[in-house]
Image (tube, rainbow, N blue to C red; front, side, top):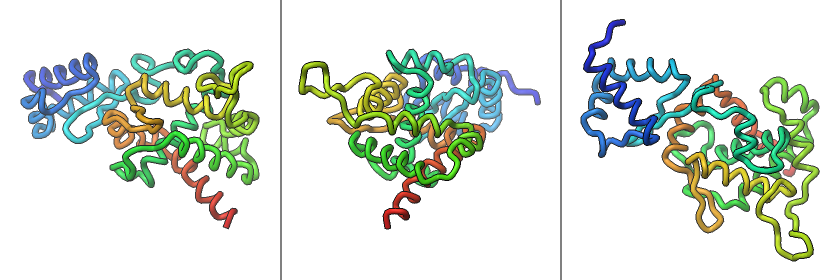
Length: 248
């Protein structure tokens, strides 16, 4: 397919702006956004550029955002980089558990792939409680290792780590509860939320979590793609329903 030079330039301007600032907002770039809305060739060219870079364009309300695609090694983080970003003490079990906490957080804001969030904020205590409930439900599954292989997500190592940790831990020779580290369930939740803040995915106020528009865009577009394994979040969401049935 041959593209008009003008459309290629607009698509490249949109991509450059997203790479430089993280987003393209309609109010700041009205001309480019109108062309993006109205001209299929501009959208196709932008999709072509981003696909070649292993990126996804995520539109939410009046803005465009970029998300690293699957196995992106340019703007995406490797597992080693993720562990370094998460902090001291994060090895594979802690990293996978952080991933699990992120999935749980998404299912707490979005149910059954609904485009809009059904809650404004999520108290961190509620997130901790939800992770606890879902991990507890794993105990009732017959073969957690087979399920881990099916979803390509290590639920077994997450279960083993989470159930081995206390809810909280205290600082040495003190009654003060530790807020950071990998020694308790609470600190793992805190470190995961901190990591998501650094990535521009959430904000935190008064011990509650709020999704950024960038995060909402990524969930709405990238997270629900089959190659991003949205089936994992569906399975994690089902753990709560399973636990509720067992308690009934």
